[in-house]
Length: 151
Image 1 (cartoon, rainbow, N blue to C red):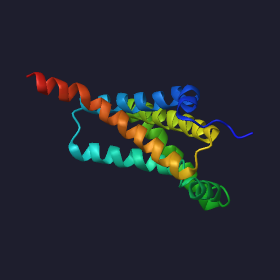
Image 2: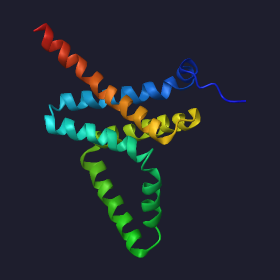
Image 3: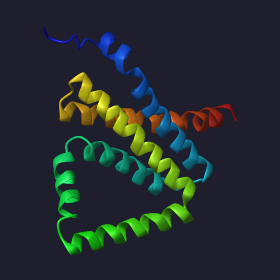
Image 4: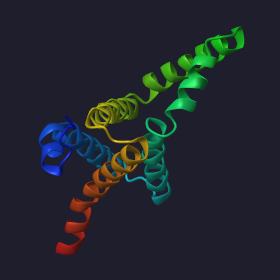
């Protein structure tokens, strides 16, 4: 028996992770608004959202291979230890940014798992995760745009 993959069934089953993904990116966008970041930083954020979606869908086999290769030699262990130390410094110095980044990674992985359960192919999952991330960033612009219209 083939599983029912109609839109109402998918929304009923996976709406929570998809909503969390949109809300997490909207919250991060609001954080960027409060820091009054430049348009270049917004462009980098959009590219990172798309790159994150690619990394956990289409790019996962290559990413997994690189991570596993890092633990197969002394140089790899050294690089991983150096990377971990650098991340520790970033956690201490930029805790709020790190917390947002950790939240985005966690909610993206949750949505990816839901996409796997739903039976989405990697290309469709990439497009869906990228669209939801960009939708969240777009939602974060609504208060700014609405306040500029009222004045």
